[in-house]
Image (tube, rainbow, N blue to C red; front, side):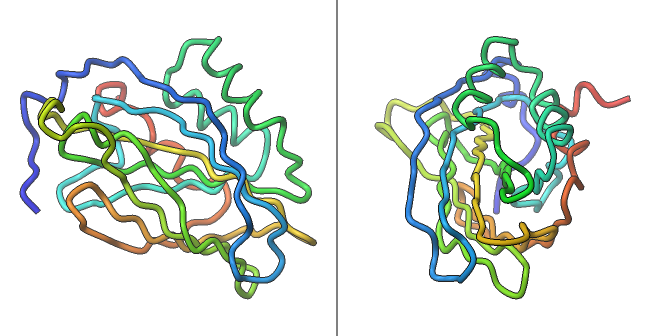
Length: 196
């Protein structure tokens, strides 16, 4: 992979682009999942704390209202945007649901969508694939590093998972699989410029 820290990183500024069209989908083939819903979160031009050379993406398994508030706060969104996202999520019931937040990286402004596939619950662990997808006319896209993210709401029949195994593929096609536990990794979402 050939992306490095560049002066173009800040070209999108600290602004965040949001799309709030939630998408309901059928559950994966794993037993225990009754419904999934994807909510696009943000596309940032500011480097998050998790991103270092060779790191493909970052996942957080949200398991409580407190985790959800902290995760959204890390994106430093305007209050009305946070309210719109929370409205799109329609108040998860964390007794039966989990929200998976995944952020990755892409090589141009056209990489602004994260899609989820192969969502399964296997031996009590949520498993999924998340990939950054290019949208729009490639020739019209600014060549800047972007950090797209999305939320995956998962409803289960029974006790919701406390662990997840997520395979993330970035905009260059690089891929890695990470294991995360509920609530871990929220600090990694904070923009690098806001770190002490």
